Image (tube, rainbow, N blue to C red; front, side):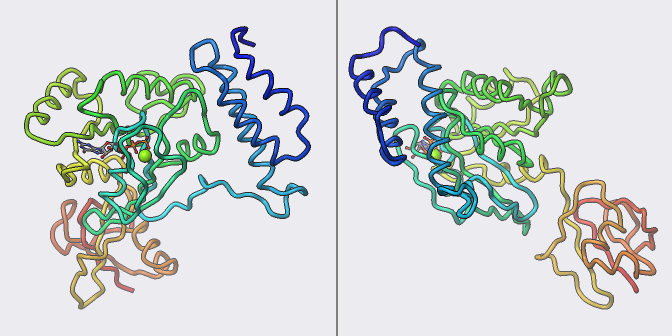
Length: 328
Ligand SMILES: Nc1nc2c(ncn2[C@@H]2O[C@H](COP(=O)(O)OP(=O)(O)OP(=O)(O)O)[C@@H](O)[C@H]2O)c(=O)[nH]1
Ligand SMILES: [Mg+2]
């Protein structure tokens, strides 16, 4: 317990201990947290109090019987589309601005840090592929929301959003340290395979790349970091380099678009099936219809891995953009 707490802390603590109802306890705990001065010596205390507060709020939301009105965390978000992608990083880097610019969702954007308090999902469309983007609150070592960490661990891809006009390298390092402390490491990192850490695909997104002069700053950053990291620059405010970002997300998700040609009909290029890279004709058939995988007699493929219209086996591996005709 830090010794240099203000007298006010102890007064509120007295009232907190004497509180009768859970509502009152929550209110007083919030007040108590606000009396703790912010410095290194109180880091642990503040983290402990915040944890207690979050548990209390959760228990209250669950109701007195602890099950009937079971509280579902806002972080339990159904995966939709070709992949679930979360945006994370330090405060104020433009995570919410990006989700606003790229999807139909409208999370709040503001000049001050710590604007976002909860997750907001939206759908990004990239070349007729729907990808789920989820805006998150900033990473905050003082307070780690367990449900948010679960969502991060479940996600298919993490976008580490940093500010190209700020201390970009420090922001990347601090965010990776934060994740490593939670045993989440980049799959391209050296210690990806070590220990009990979970390796995740991480794409670094340098936001606020508003003009050509900043494109040059980005080029310098790329040189500094070498080519081991997937890294893109964008400007949420000016809509710059969105195509490159979409492509990088698509590549990192390791999926591909396969088009179905119903026999005797035209190919609908606006409705691809999305499959993991390396999938076969049989995988595609299963995706088109659960019965097809048993029923189809032959398949023809147009695309990169075959001659146009070549008859192929069930095990034929497909490539992004291939057109497949299944015959029953
Ligand atoms: N110049 C410039 N400013 C931007 C850009 N994107 C966002 N901003 C500004 O940066 C500030 C923070 O944007 P937010 O989207 O709220 O940032 P955030 O990362 O969601 O912030 P937290 O929710 O606090 O973590 C706002 O004033 C935005 O207008 C950009 O591409 N260029
Ligand atoms: Mg935000």
